[in-house]
Amino acid sequence: MTSLRARWLLLGAALCAGLAGFWLAHQLDRAGPQLASATWLPQSRPVPEFTLTDTSGRSFTRQDLASAPTLVFFGFTHCPDVCPTTLLKLAQARRRAALAGLRVVLISVDPQRDTPSALGLYVHAFDPQFQGLTGDPATIARLAASFGVAMNRVELPGGDYTMDHSAVVFLLDDAARIVAIFTPPFEVAALSGDLQRAAPYLQRGTRGAP
Image 1 (cartoon, rainbow, N blue to C red):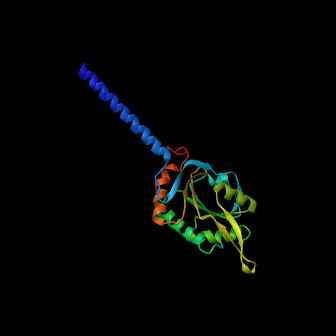
Image 2 (tube, rainbow, N blue to C red):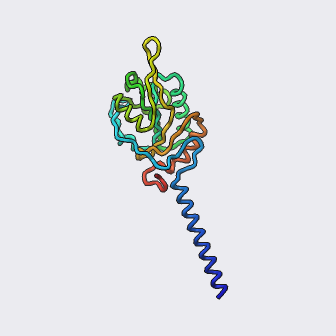
Image 3 (tube, one colour):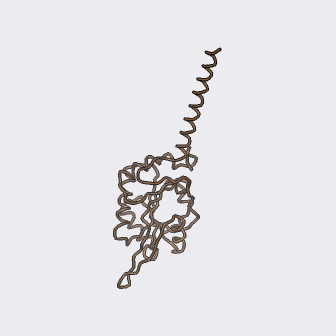
């Protein structure tokens, strides 16, 4: 009887350990990947509806954004340093990570100067697969605010101006939800590694996705 009871106790302990391990794995899976250069959001943030114009002059909406995992960066073509440096590193990280279907989208914070054609020439110089969006200033301002991006026009001597803006890169899953945020300084190796770790979480219906 004592031997039988001991067996049942051992079986119960093993079952509890197994359930605890399953629960822990499930919780870690729900928490998302461990990233080196980005913050994985505990709760994904859906991008609101919008309509902008792509570099071909066609309308681009949230539905288009939802068709594939995407890196989104707010910037402008007259940016002297931060934007070109960031886009160059994103181009290198995208090639190095080799994630099928991953897009990089630059949303202009300077639609007054960034026409579709000008934006196209700019982003395609970094990578022919890059996409650029421009359009109504009010729409861009609302969209930037929904991402938590600050943007401000700064007047310069002689009547020129520049744009101050948050230098943050957002990772979206293929349901147009913000799932992670990359902050400077950006390093290609860290970016590409994080993209590979995040890849299993970027598809709709993925186990553990927010």
